[in-house]
Length: 174
Image 1 (cartoon, rainbow, N blue to C red):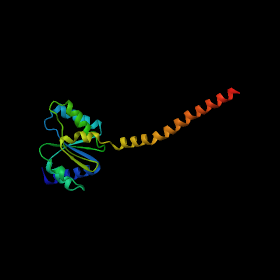
Image 2 (tube, one colour):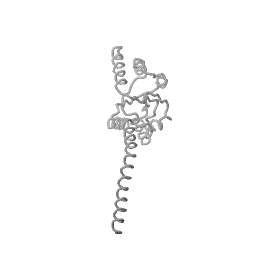
Image 3 (cartoon, helix red, strand yellow):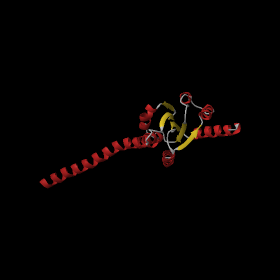
Image 4 (spheres, one colour):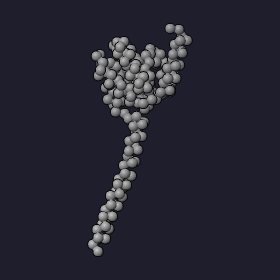
């Protein structure tokens, strides 16, 4: 590969890293053509950009981007694919789900950069699937804020019918 081609790939990778908030490094080496195609389709459906890269080019792209990627650079060995996304837990869920279906237990998580934190190793997959996305957190906050209001409204409504019943009973006594 020519030097200018490598430079172009490095700059494209750098721009992609800046564009997406989260990325996962995974090993998909043992997947055959059918499984690889299925993984690409699943990534496309979930708005995940899957890219196969050379480790040295990815390392240089990470060096050209602001951020702490030293731990990620340590796992850049063997076959590496990068999953870029804007939702932090989607690739983790996909890797876990796809790994259960795959005959070869692939893809395997190498590392992830999610919410400005680094996660290294396949054992971090469960932690990553538990991370809530921005929309999930907003939904939880709205539900928590609505709960006291609903309690007040229901208390007022039930109290109104109770008072009405008492007044009606007192009115019928005379």
